[in-house]
Length: 200
Image 1: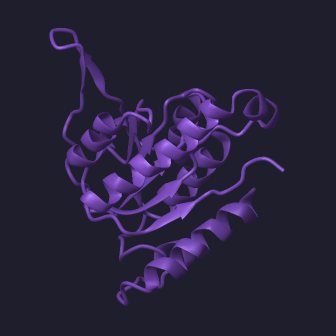
Image 2: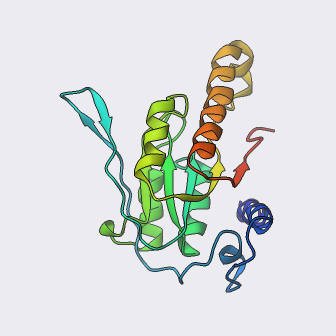
Image 3: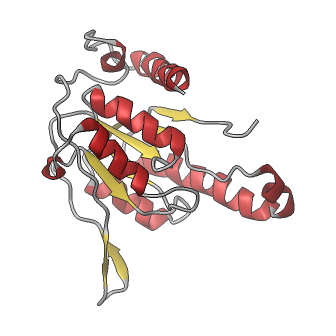
């Protein structure tokens, strides 16, 4: 698992170095985005709330912490939560978008405990959002500090179910990814790592 995460981080490093030459060289994680301070021992998890009067989701605005922001889709899953842990320890802030279909918010709470972070730090921001909901996804981008990069882990992956319900998988995996790419283009985020396979 640790090797997989290091490979992902190295891929992101290579991609971003094409567009920027000013990188911190403290250690490998600090090379793959933008210069960042040394990690501080603080992390928290947040999520949006419901607005009963309008029956819409309310996305609180997030103040910038001064750290580079990484968007992780499917971040409450196994690989996503381990990646978050590495990024937080390396001094980055993380925004997690996950619909919790195949994951649990408990994993984010455990990341908070492992990093020994304080709840008020706003280092991890969580949105219970489906990538297929383009409006909610756009609201995530609008209410967050600008993202330096995106790591895309969200997707359905059960081989047997995909054969039985192919349209469900096409809709979720293709439409969700296209919505994400549209939002990234609209809001100026031009760095992405796509996890192309989660099942062998």
